[in-house]
Length: 429
Image 1 (cartoon, rainbow, N blue to C red):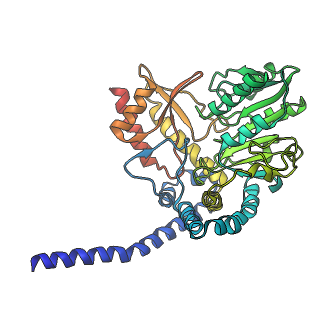
Image 2 (image 1 turned 120 degrees about the horizontal axis):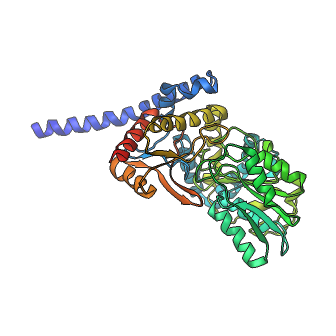
Image 3 (image 1 turned 90 degrees about the vertical axis):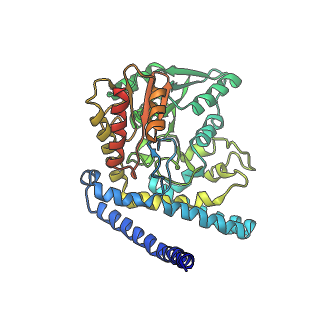
């Protein structure tokens, strides 16, 4: 009798839990919606430090409580509404792949293109959907006609994939890279402008500009650089992997010629999604990486001839845009900068801690970097994870030797208190 009673109690308990699951999910969804609604009634500055609202909104994510992820700069998790959309589109595709993929989901690209173009502030005829920043900027690197002796200006702090692409073209075709080596952090736009101008000669054809440097979070004056380049008849390529949906701006604000970004970073879109922008007159002059029957067409869609790929992640970009807009670009930026200042201000009291980034919002936002005197940055990152379950990344790259910390909108100040405590203990040891 005891064993039977135990059996029924367990069975009823399981059934009860299952029956409550949809109600719990509904309650969480309603709470998230209410939190987003409440956030939108506040100004960006007022919303930035409302911990209750942000903690409720964080329920939209499914991140593990076992690891404190402070490396969102690498790739960000998606809110559940985006994950569910990917699953839904993926399962639909499997019901009859060639029909649902190419006759149903593929037709959704044009509405999605318009939605992305509205977010980016450009014409939908200038925007292509692809898989990441590397693919976008690789298209520009190899798609722009250059001749032997033509020069490109870029910095040693640019992202390796872009550096490797230009080095390969330099090796194969004889174009020349004029290097800038930035001493970060920089809190003067004129210093950056002068560096680009000083590296420019009469043979310079392209300025490669990283809007927000991945290693430290340094924001470069991309709009000013593009304006200066345009006066000189120089083409501009903007690497916006870290700035899009992180900083509150439109592509049109930069007035650049080419622009590429990854949507799986700060927009929290599905992994392996991105976009590229090409100024309308330049589309027909730019060759696609993947050939098609009209490589010199003025149609932006020629850059989307990738062959077979999954349409599920691409279509779920729409849900990521909706979620981003529900928060608001300016509110998101203010919150991210607030979180960076929160942990930086706390550990700044330790005399062994050194920072490698500006605290001013015009020169950095969510990304922050620090080091501890007398310690290898790789050891700091290892201790944070092995001892405290905190995931960061150590950076050793061209004038940068630091631990990079990147919270996101689902990160709470309680999470950062845990990180602050860990840093203090490591520094003390």
